Image (cartoon, rainbow, N blue to C red; front, side):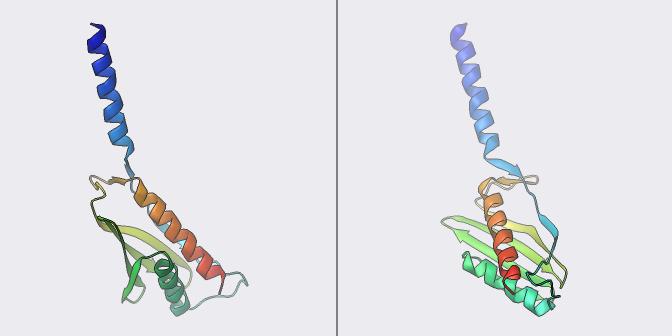
Length: 130
């Protein structure tokens, strides 16, 4: 009987560990464009800052349409693709696609969140430097 409880506890721990490796996707939505001097930026300046921010972190950033940049990050065998929608006042970082990040039903590998947090921080820093 004791052996059965140990196996059951081990199974629960393994299941919990597997679930802990994925988390719900959280997008950055309508983050304000804030600059250090309080000046209003043009959409071109915002676009250029977003592209520079992503590239500085190894993202491939492509302006695909006015107000839209597609970013792709390849790390080892993993890839994340996001849409960055922007205007002169706000920007959003939205999940688009991924590979080898265990995406399923709105859940994704926990490392994805760190990559998005880093991209968001880098964008804010680039905008503030203008």
